Image (cartoon, rainbow, N blue to C red; front, side, top):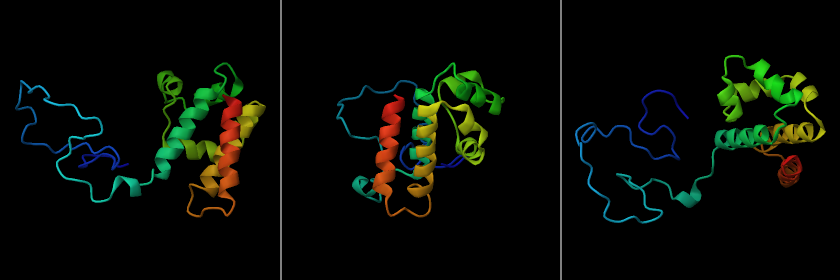
Length: 159
């Protein structure tokens, strides 16, 4: 994902922000004549078939982190540590589980967050760290299926 005024903010989103022809010109939008599920309002067809596009690691990490914080005990020490660790992040963003890559990396480098978690949260956090290193990193581990299965069972146990 890139910052600034890019043509598509994310290659998965397919949102055209450079539509200068009708930007702030049309006041009355015509009614949609047909609604076909799966059909997108895109000017050009994609260069790569959708079946050949894998979800990028950053999207996977953000989704896993969001689900991890969702399953955490909101009254526990681990959740309180997140609030104190990132004082500039509003409580609303923490409650909505919105974290960005640098914050996740900062949590992964420190050891204190591991100590603040309860047993099931700690197991899930260690599985998350392992999946980031052995599956989503630059080199995929030989036993990545075991790493994925461990992640799924720990997330299920955490709720």
